[in-house]
Length: 120
Image (cartoon, rainbow, N blue to C red; front, side, top):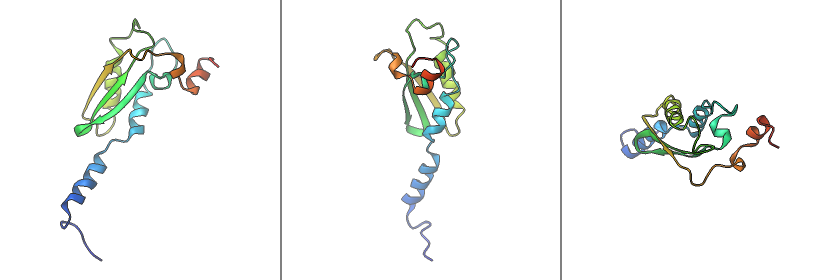
């Protein structure tokens, strides 16, 4: 049996990087724990999450919107998102960018959200 340990250090580094990579589905699970208090559907199924990007050194950037710019929890929700994503193993830092372009509309909701809200 041939041993490669030490012979190909770049492979060791690659394996470590792969082990450190954060599972995307774990980030989605974390986001699904955050709810708009006025709507009985999580923010992921509502379509409020526009992007989840893993950046350098296990830093996560979440791009999101709100159902309306004047949403009563507009100031609190980014912190809720940050706190939820920080609970995922391996996440170091989280930044949440709030955007309103494109504006949210009901077409962004999942079928699950539509069913829950009787919007079929």
